Image 1: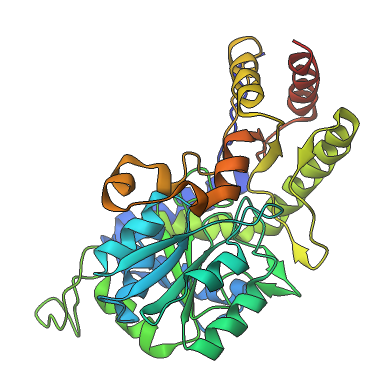
Image 2: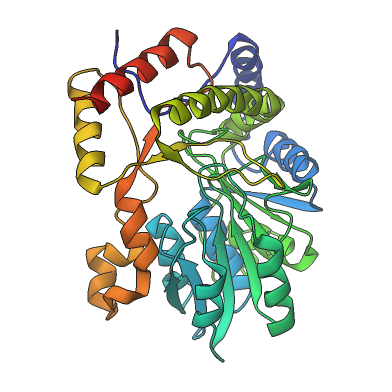
Length: 372
């Protein structure tokens, strides 16, 4: 069998037909940015997430930086879980303030609420809540209540969790803003790209300006220090096609995860806990092994002997990155859960085009590898 990837984007004939037709129109019009497809994608995305506004950007990183700059966090602190892509912390620095890293919850691998509360200081301006592996943070409503009481701004990093929800409220619609990624591995992709969702009209107008060099009425009317953070019309056409299919994509991922669930129980392998109030979209399917050595051995066997690629959940963590080790004096006791759990996490392949034959092969290979 050919190498089975850990993840893979999916475009069927219907999507390809729409994208091909859209791109012909785009090329004919000569309008490659800020055209009707970007506007259409934004409108459909806002409707899907249940927010008033959606603003397309070049990446989730640029989306985060735009939100942080609008919220005026300069010279203040922003709490960020260590279990995230380093860009979440980097954007805090680019926005002129200090990231304060916090530990994670053992069951969800999301920001630990108790450590979040401990890390709050008089300088805390905002928190970035990162949803993990397709799971919306199970305690995001509690975090929101804390933020409202203490006047802390809440930004959702939804790179992993487009379509997830809690109590029927979509990820990206709960905080002051939601930031999404359309990188090739994500639930839907535009090749690369991002999106901001918000109910704040001022933030929406600011984002529209900042993503285009800080322009007002046009590039002859620069009102603030911005950047080139636009999404192309071609990328937006991919997004429209993919968004049309998102519920089908999620349904397939949930079905595949259900099969894995039954087998992991049979193999006595720990997986992330299910939270009944949360609608999980299974961007990843992480399992938790007993030791880091077991995890590393299993990963190597699956790849080298069986041709199966596996992933991780942001390991090494942000606090383990050389850059952040140089910048901050972390203690061993700062990230007890992250340091204990994340080195033991392995993500099994899960993607929309995964066949029964492929998944059966992964399961059978995993069973054999566990006994080697």
